[in-house]
Image (cartoon, rainbow, N blue to C red; front, top):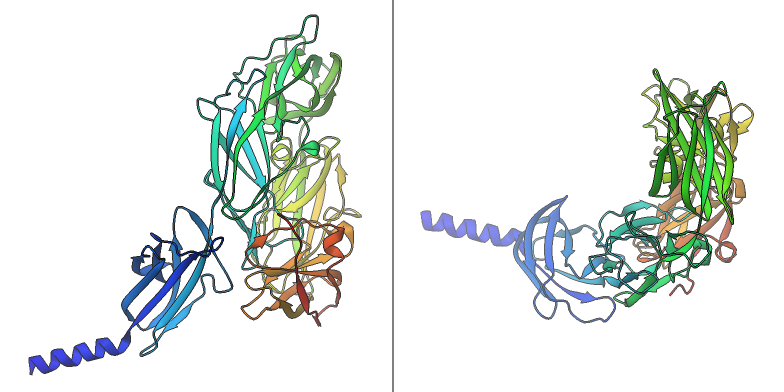
Length: 533
């Protein structure tokens, strides 16, 4: 009886346990990849694990019936490629599963940072900026320097910056996804400045862009094919004339402000001094270029601040005035029009971003220079403090789910979502969401695991919060919901391809579509293809 029961249990186990086997290939060469860790997952939990052999083959025996996804991991590869990436498959009785996957190899950049004499510069900070790849309707960028992530596919590619440092000999190396990258180096703060020429001005090291140019506008991009290498990159730090900047810090009533900290800032680099008893200050050697100067002082419970963008060119600057001012109070509310009595969705945070200099710098510099976060509470109310200046607004997080869409961000008669607005006194902001959006659906030929982006025809609305996107399924079908009524360009991007910057050449390949409130519009698309490498 016991033996019969054992045989019955064995037969039952065999009836529900099947084989999953497959092969892993290099997407660039087509050869099998050995040593790849393969896992079968349920949700995020691995239930089975094995490793590919020298030919890239793997096999799981006695896999119990159920739904699984496969995950592939190797230090030499970053992502699978193809429409079946990470898709769930079913293991059923008497139905062996065969998988085939192609892994994208890491690309590589290596090189050296040197000074004017060709000596390696230790501990120089490198910044690598790129837009990444499209996969499953999102953009992804990762490097061996850490960080990275995936963002919603957008009409304005999200430039992601990764930072690393040179070693003791000035050398660096980084693995990264294929694509087009900008590279720059910031000199270490303790690097001795170069000797000036006889009777010449003092010199100072400055941020240098590949291939050793002073301005980002003149920089070249580094292009990496899948599995490609760009070796022996040399970045030679540039030195420019430096001049003194002298001035005075003033209190709100115009009197001199002593012992106030003043900072001279550029991205992640800064220098600071303290004002003298008469409020005066001096920076002895400021490199030529545009710099932000900020002064901060605490008066009781109030933090005063002054911010000025100053162009340093050819000669010393005298009589710079930094006038401290108290912050303004900005109150606001998020409202949903057309949804009486309904509860608010999860509301995204936004940044009231201070305009930065003649080139309108934003981001990190703006956030530390007087910009302010807007974090609505559960009732949609928010309050923050900001300093006088010209502002714009952009979302920090993903927008609320359908049916909500951003309609406007009102400050008086102005719309912060589409224009810059000067705020010089206490202000009220109303963030308006609506629920009567339309949708766009159709088929995108050869979209695979890519996605579709709707770009507003109105250039003023080509800002974060107004584009919409959605992924394509394995058949190329897509649907983008909760779209603000208006005219759009519809663009489809192939999965596992590079992110393309929006320009007229791309828009000329787009399909125009009109979105009407509460209606579905149809648009069949062809995937955008354009040589990038």
